[in-house]
Image 1 (cartoon, rainbow, N blue to C red):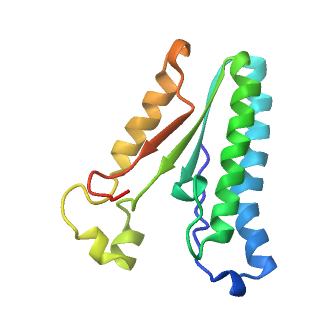
Image 2 (image 1 turned 135 degrees about the vertical axis):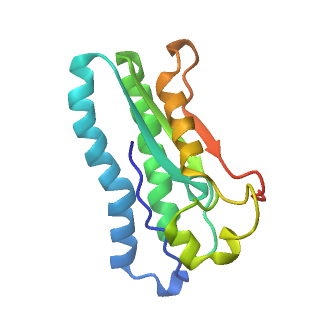
Length: 156
């Protein structure tokens, strides 16, 4: 599984080339490096599962999130290419869009209004883990490439 944040918000006029490059390195390039090494181990075994964690930014860019969206779009494209290349070699590659806040101490401290918004307003880590486990256990006749996870109360 590969997941990295890098969810920074800057007006495009204030986004430095260094910030954009670093966010791309954290999201897309690090995903490539991780996946390449995992593929080197999985292909000879003839099995494996790689799950890339994306975000809403993987599908559409938001105002102020040019760096994050660029990196997450690139990560999704990497996962698509790998799924087509490695699927025939019995390697399941999936991309999961996480759309919403996750129940963590960081969310609790930095977004108390989201954290305290009531039941089903944020994603539970155990429920995310269960969805990832289901991806791993899928039969080849019905492999999922992309899954979208969001809390029940998330507006989309």
